[in-house]
Amino acid sequence: MKFLVKIRKTVMLFIKAIIVVSLTLSFVEIWNQNYIESLFSNKGNYLVIFSFVFIFSVFSSLYGAFNIGIYRIHEIIYSFSLAALVTDVVMYLELSLIARNLVAVPPMIVCFIYQVGTIFLLSFCANTIYFKLYPARRVLAVFSDDAKGFEFIKKMSIISERFKVESGINAEHTDIENIKKHIDKYDAVAICDIDKRMQKEIISYCYTKQKRTYLLPDITDIILNNGYEIQISDTPVIMSRNRGLTTEQALVKRFFDILISAVGIIILSPLMFFIAVAIKIDDGGPVFFKQNRVTQNGKIFNIIKFRSMVVDADKDGAKKAENDDNRITKVGRIIRACRVDELPQLFNILKGEMSVVGPRPERVENVYEYTSLHPEFDLRHRVKAGLTGYAQLYGKYNTSSEDKLNMDLIYIETYSLIKDLKLIILTIKVLFMRESTEGFDSSANSKVKKPNIKINNEGEK
Picture 1 (tube, rainbow, N blue to C red):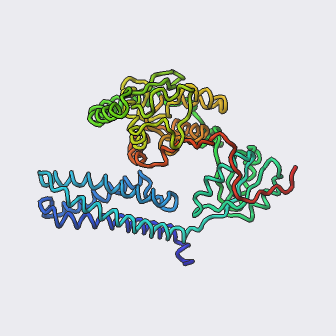
Picture 2 (tube, rainbow, N blue to C red):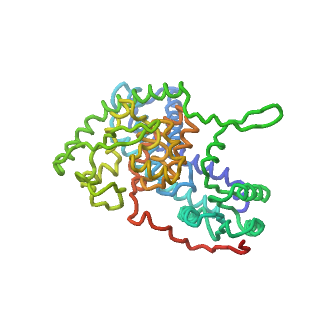
């Protein structure tokens, strides 16, 4: 076992290869037995096999299926299954082109069912092996704000297989030398919202002691982390452009917005018609819901969505959607869970009020509220609001405004057309993930409860 730990990266790479090979063999078996008309007489079959391996590997990577041990087991299974489904659909079309005729569908369905069973088995095995090779790290949390620190610890503690947050230190009440003594006892340090000078000293100390660090970034960290390394004479310098998208990037982004929204409206029009009829039959109210939202440069526009709540849901004042909110209609629960209530925003994109990818368009009231808490919140309006984006994909409906801001700034600072395409593909993955639409808890505004960890405040100032 000690030898395997030394080569654990190679072991995990081998396991991932086994998953790819196993699913490829299942496809090859079905292909040979049921699609004889799609077989080549020579080396062309190798190209078809390569196509399967390439497409499955690319989509598995995009959906994060290879992040074994990082993502939860159900998400690994879901990601692999979704990648297999997309690959099987593409391969079905490829086999039909080779045969010059639409081949039978049932064998591919059988292939997919077999693949899902294989994914379940191999994913559990891979997950078990990963945590044998990578046991949970004992983590020391260092923070200055109890509420923010405890919330960060709570999120880390959910993934108990990876993190054992056993102790916490409030940096406001403990000197740096005492913190260093505690760091020596742990495998890693989680740093959350502390003084920059102390943060620098802790990171430097952890680097010296080869201790892993997990840093909750602020605006400055995000901007600097995504800067450019340049050389001025014999001095290395980090340059931040701080200007958002270039004119060329904005033009290309707008071209693809028009193309994708126009094609999307045409293809999805039957689904949108069906949803509209269902809403009308449900309670007889209006099909669409319009509301003022904020987009690029603080401009206010009317967002269009399928109505998922009762008429006049906000008659008693604006209120965030909660879990089991009785204002949500029967049809509304379904379309919100599948995210299809957002489809009419394709018209907002076509009009130029939104983009396919960008920060989530917030209500005017929310922008005022969040900006008062975090003045930097307005920085996310450097680009158009988007139908999908970093915060929409990696966050939840009830993710904090600060975390949403950080994710939106990461997107703006690292923008590229390739990244937009990746986020669009990833959108398919989150459509059926329940946690992504999780509402606010009824006690969302109450104080964060203290987690069950040991708080070390020895050496208080």
